[in-house]
Amino acid sequence: MAMSAEEIETLIRAALPDAEVTITDLAGDGDHYYAHVVSTAFAGKPRVIQHKLVYEALGGRMGGVLHALQLTTAVPN
Image (tube, rainbow, N blue to C red; front, side, top):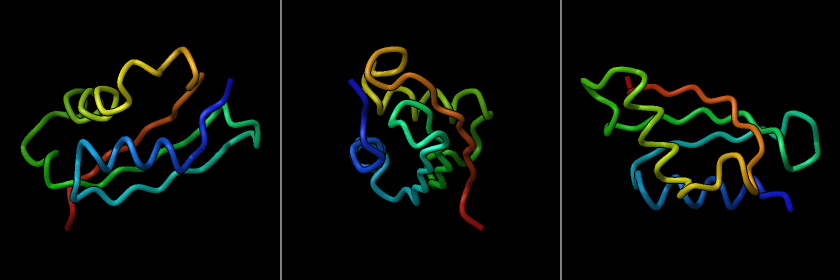
């Protein structure tokens, strides 16, 4: 069972309300996504913690309904 890009974006925005989220379906199969997330919540945090915040937003779906997610994060300019 695959996840839609819209569902991924909704989950991330629910946890990080100010986030700018760009989702790309890398293989067109609903299982392999790239996400770029920009949020003020990442300010002053190391990259590993930034990614952890996004994975927490996905609520344990990684490795289940969400097979693969390539992730980049950033703080707004």
